[in-house]
Image (tube, rainbow, N blue to C red; front, side):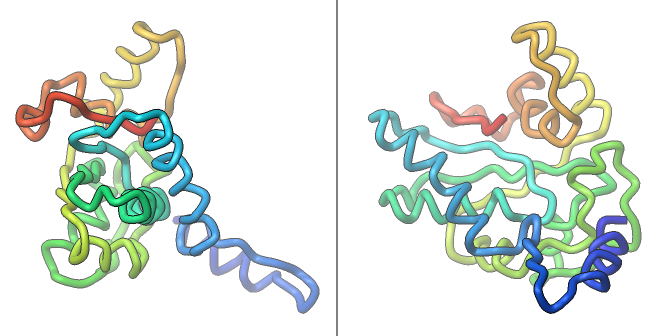
Length: 180
């Protein structure tokens, strides 16, 4: 699991080494937030943003970017696959909880526990948790490849699944930004 690999990596960090967390780091979030800055600078404001969530780094950055640009009214649809839905479980429990194991094919979403800041954002910003099947994510990857000649991993396919499956969660919006 990612947690086991992370523990091993941390055990190898020496006094002169640096360790950058892949999703639980404010510097990383600020970097992700620049995507929203770019969209705002283009003059376009989406009615909603769809993104995949694993450990929560992208989610934290997008939420930070929305706040920074005065778009606190733009909801985020945070998509995970069944078997890797640590954010969804945190929302249900009212606090971050650890999944027993990751069973999804979307292993890039495989953080057994979402970072604390991602959960906090769910109380500060309109975020809707959506869970899709592995099959939906894989089908979206195949369709995106056929449509754009670009192969993405199942973690990305999770967010694309909402668009390709014409999910009811998107019906109320006329302009949606899907982070690919």
